[in-house]
Amino acid sequence: MSYLFINLKLCIQILNLINNNMSGNKTLSIIKPGAVRNKHIGHILSKIEENGYTIAAIKTIQLRLEDAAEFYSVHQGKPFYQELIEFMSSGPIIAMVLLKDNAVEDFRKLIGATDPEKAAEGTIRRMFATSKTANAIHGSDSDENAERESSFFFSRQEWLRRTQVGLD
Ligand code: ADP
Ligand code: MG
Image 1 (cartoon, rainbow, N blue to C red):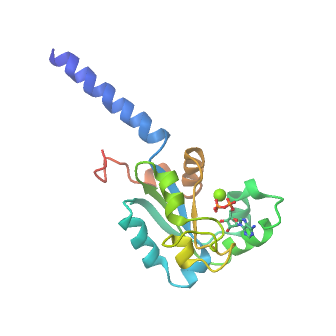
Image 2: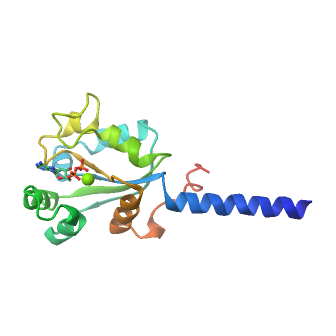
Image 3: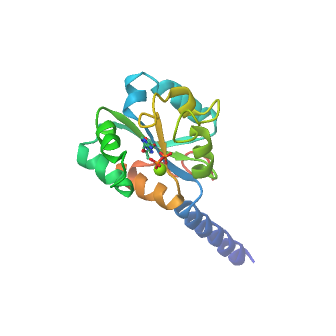
């Protein structure tokens, strides 16, 4: 009987592990150079924490032009691409891995539309963006990209696990 119970517990732990590594509870965010220059780091981090996210990894870094080009390579060829990568490499940024259930979708709501003029009242972009390019903050748009983008900035040892921060 206890053998069965231990096996069941192990199965649940494995399922949790697969689920946590795969999807739904992690996003990658960047506080962009404009918002850093305008001293909005503190305000933005408060908003993020107030909305239930756990900061699992965080660092200040300045991207080189080629790093920004790689990060935004999906937009290569678009009219705003050059301006975007020049802006993203123009000064320090804050990169972070954020944990929360349904992280990707909820975070996109919290940051608001790409164009700050179209972003809803109370969203981070509405509050802290100065233009469409300098729109204060980045948030991954899918679980797959959250994984890819987290690994772009951090090694796996650098971000805290859900169990470490009491989420599981
Ligand atoms: P989001 O960041 O909302 O996912 P996109 O992935 O479409 O938006 O674009 C990446 C970034 O490129 C945006 O956050 C913004 O900084 C910039 N950008 C997108 N579209 C434009 C545009 N039409 N004009 C200027 N900058 C843009
Ligand atoms: Mg995007």
